[in-house]
Length: 102
Image (cartoon, rainbow, N blue to C red; front, top):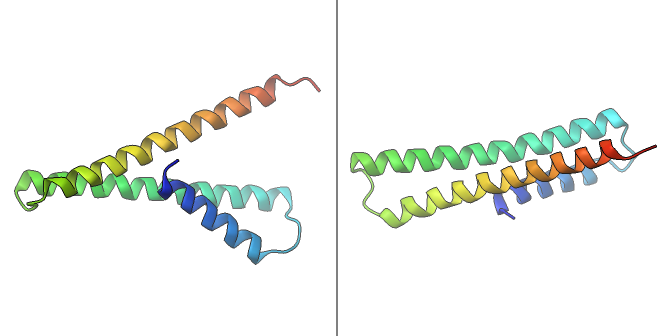
């Protein structure tokens, strides 16, 4: 699993746990999950923008090190693929819950 996404989720979860020692209401839990997910998606977006910027600089001749550009692009790709897989697993879990009979 990608470090950008998982670190963001873990850091946010740890902060939330240490910040509140009482039980959360469903609304608070929902807000906490939303914030963690939003933070993780922002990290993915930053990685994509960094990759685009490095690629543009390479095309303009401003970057000499092709290796650095390729590493940045690969990090962005892996981050995006991890995010897509997490989304797929969440959708699969939701569908499974919806199929459960009460």
